[in-house]
Length: 105
Image (cartoon, rainbow, N blue to C red):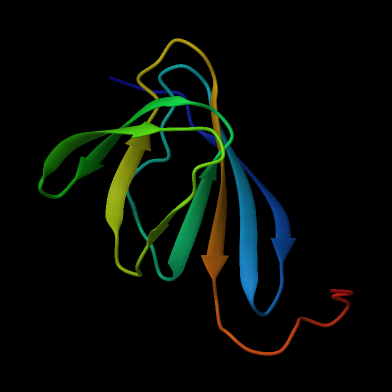
């Protein structure tokens, strides 16, 4: 079954992090991928996401504003099984250290 693609919009990309907003249409998916960095996800929508993993399928219930962390190496395809759009922000952590150039905080 062909699913529509989730739509990524990179909001920040510097030496320390990449921040991407992901928008999943109903039935949308990321496609299989492996995370090359530690990352944090902050859901902007409440609802389930289906995770295809090498070990099988898992349904994860996410809540708006409740973040979670995953380590480098996670491999999966993320699918929106719902009938409404699902949105989250993903923060990939490239390296710890000094603030990025141009950072005012």
